[in-house]
Length: 267
Image (cartoon, rainbow, N blue to C red; front, side, top):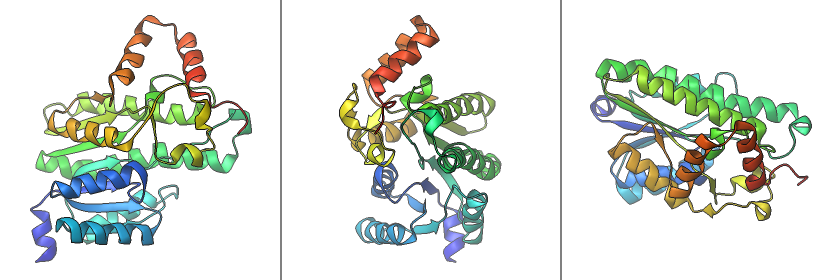
C-alpha cells in the first residue's frame, strides 16, 4: 500500500542533499509538499535531515547513502528507487566537487572524483530516470551547473569544464525532449556561500565577485520549475557576465574569469 501510494505521487530526488545547496533545496521542496529521495555519502546526515523534514512538513522522505564518485553509485540510487516503488518526477543533480589551483598540481584522485561526480554520475542519473519520465510524459531534470561553465576558468580548469558539460548536455536534451512533457534545466550560479569554496581549497578573500547566499539559488530553482527555461541565472550580474561574452574573444573571457575567480594561486 505504501509503495503503491507513492507511485501515484511525484517524488523529488536531490543529490548532495546532506549540506549546502542540496540541503536547502530539500527543505524548500519539503515545504512545498514534495515527497523526497535524498542522496549523499553520509547516511547519518541524511537521516537527521529526513527526520527534521518529516516532523516539520509531514512529507515522506527516503534516504539513499551512496557515494556518487564510485563506479556504480548512480545505479545504487536507481535500484533503491525501484525497490521502494518511487516514481521520480523531479531529478535535481546538485552533488558536485571542486579543487582550486593550477591543473598540473591537481592530484589524480581528485581528478577522478571530480569527473565521476560532476559528469558521469549526473549523466547516468538522467539516463536512468528519463525513460520512466518519458513513459508518463511528465518530469523535470534540473542540474546545478555554474557561471564558471560559460567559459574556462584558470585555477578551476576541470571544475569549469565539468560544468560546461552539464550546460551543453542540458541544452541538447532541452531541444531533444521538446514536446515530450519533460523539462531540462541548468541553473548557473556564481559563487555561493556554502563552505564549498573552503572545501575546494579556494581562498574566498581573493574572489572579485559577490559571494551570495544559498537562498538566491533556491529561489532560482523554484522559479525555474514554475517557468521552465533552458538556462537560469540566479542574479542579473550572472546573466550580464554571460551575455557580455558574446562580444568578447574566448581567450579574453577566460582571462577575465580567471582574474575574477582568483583561484589559481597557491592556497
